[in-house]
Length: 173
Image 1 (cartoon, rainbow, N blue to C red):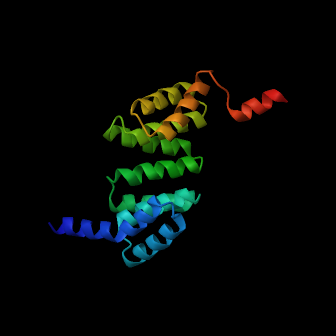
Image 2 (cartoon, helix red, strand yellow):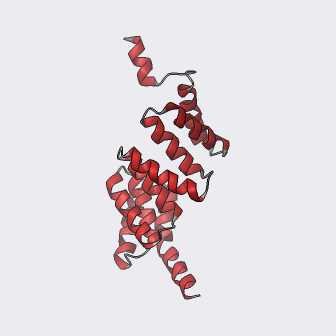
Image 3 (cartoon, rainbow, N blue to C red):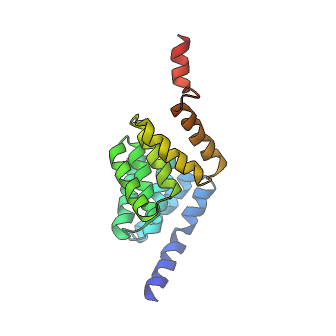
């Protein structure tokens, strides 16, 4: 019961930062979450949302540190684990991001975030067969339309049904 009370308090403290993020107010979220973390540096929710906000503003290295800090407190926190994977992807550390994706998929074999992460990491490494497999599995989870359209576009490129815009520019020269 005491753990549940502490968890509720941690969530309540981080909630304003999460709300600011959902409104697209990333810098305000970072400011709020910085305040929350200063008061309690063991608030894994605040650390998770801090990592998410930092990713949104392009501070991938700081985001990774926040996600890792959250995972040190709560090793089974799936959001922090996938967030760390996306931070690693943003930093071009694809092999490490793939290891994170595999960890998530070992726990939940059809986790959409992990499937998309795996697909994009394999795509970045030019492993077309693996990228296609993961991206198709991702699309089969019926994600939000915007992300599904992005994945479908990459799938078309992998199948040779479309070309990337940068490749199209090269062909015109």
